[in-house]
Image 1 (cartoon, rainbow, N blue to C red):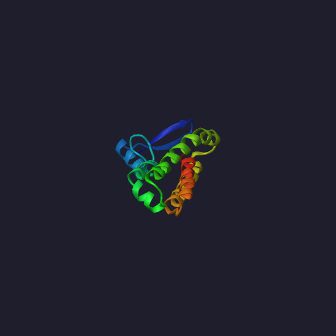
Image 2: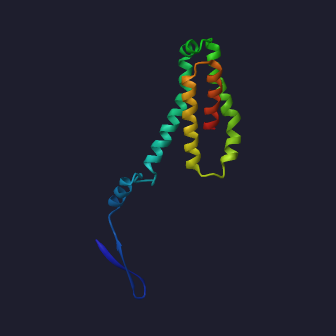
Image 3: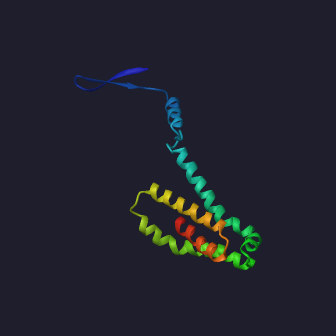
Length: 144
């Protein structure tokens, strides 16, 4: 339904008055939540990112014997890979936050995800313990 609305003397503007459910469904069609205006694609991307980061932190703890066997080291040394990753996160978090505070969020997030992906791939394919240890420190910096 269309109604004419007077803006100023002599100027007429048409404004569409639709019921709220059609406005909500229009927002939902564009990928936004009907209630909050939240972009669902962005929410999915952030959820997937958090899932990958948490899996990277917790999965090695259950695979220490396999990691130790592949890298020809002890389980305790393989456990140090997890500790080194955590230490790298602690050391890098505050400086990374300070350095990227004035930058746009999306490029920083994308660069961090790519760095995280490359470092995790190197860690997973590393034939030597020291390479896995060094590569394990990089995703900690990317995530921080």
